[in-house]
Image (cartoon, rainbow, N blue to C red; front, side):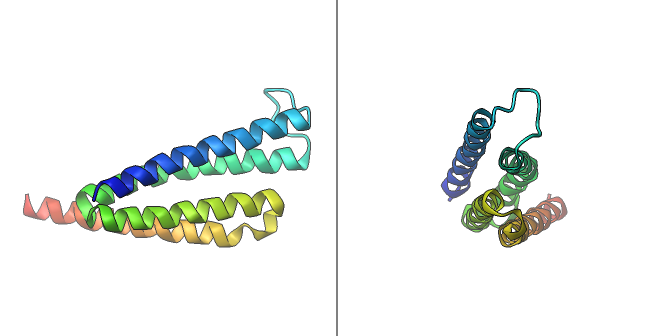
Amino acid sequence: MIELPALVTLLTVLLLFGTLFVTGKARGKYDIKAPAVSGHPSFERAYRVQMNTIENTVMFLPVLWLAASHGFGGLWAGTAGLVWLVGRVWYALAYLKDPTTRGGGFGLSTLAWAALLVMAGIGIVRAMMIG
C-alpha cells in the first residue's frame, strides 16, 4: 500500500504550491516588493504560513517514507500522513484568518508527525536487530 504515502506526498506538494500562491497573491495585493518579507499584516501571515509549512514539510516527508518503508507499512504511514495534511491545511486556513486560532491544526499535525517518527524509529531499530 505504498500508493497512500505517494498520494500524501503529492498532496503535500500541492499544499506547498497553495501556500506559495497565497503568498504571491498577497505580495501583489499589498505591494510588498521582493525581497521584503514584512509590510501588511495579511501578507506577513501568508508568508509565515508558507515558511512554516516548508519547515514542517522538511521534517514530515522523511519520516513519512521511513515509516512506510521500515515501520508499519504504507497504510498506517499514509493514514498518519493524511492526518498531518489535514492538520496543516487547518493550520494554514486558521492562521490566515486569525493567528490566535492556529493551535488546533498545529497540534493535530504535530501529533501525526510524532506518530510517524515513532513508527519509523521502531521500524529502523527492528530492522537493525534482525539484519
